[in-house]
Image (cartoon, rainbow, N blue to C red; front, side):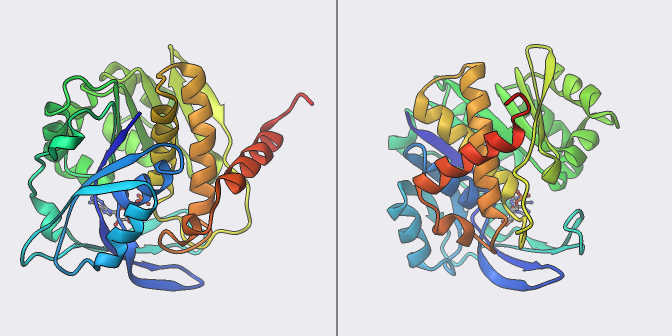
Length: 302
Ligand code: AMP
């Protein structure tokens, strides 16, 4: 079944201790849709400016992504984000963000998107996320991702969207910011009380907590020494999770748990290179092989 991804398509400038990338293709929807499209036909909704090269949209299209919902705003400029990572990659500072066309955009869905069954609300403005949900009353499930920028700027808006989705993925810092709780299990419980059945709290290299049916489960991350740019890892994680679920057409806990494994795998490819380069060279065989290896890393009984 089809997946609709709403979020940003952007130009990123990323600085790390060992290197940097300037004005490369990024954005929450770009990463999420690219990761999802390995598992299911994916549709994307985002505004871009006239500065977005046609070749990038063509590349997404060739990767099983319907780009009808990417609207070029006449005279507009694409979102630009600049981030710097600490030497350990544990901290990230946004040095600059220019929302440009992303500040306020037309969220009217193309006619052919109105039958979308699954929705991934990638990091973006709560009003746009709400507007998309309004247009898809018959959806099977929606997953929300967000970011400190929106929690600090429009907390009520984020909480309103939370109440309307079946699942949420946030990182540990965002979970604490949203709930005011330091303990992550308490934060997960509080997030579940705000609406979603499924709460996933990402903890970077330490994996993720799945909170469902009133209890937590731990998921380990892929252990790697090959980290070059963590940007977009969370988007790939959520995108692959929803892509897998949409591909199966099944919203059950076993499917969600398998989807989380694929999310972990796609995030691990993402962080190996700048921009979406880590995803560009991946095949379905690579994905399956790494999933097996991840199971081997996690397995404790054999
Ligand atoms: P992540 O590393 O998963 O947090 O995602 C980073 C991506 O989000 C980058 O590619 C940015 O272009 C994009 N981004 C940064 N700030 C925002 C924002 N306020 N709204 C939407 N997307 C953003």
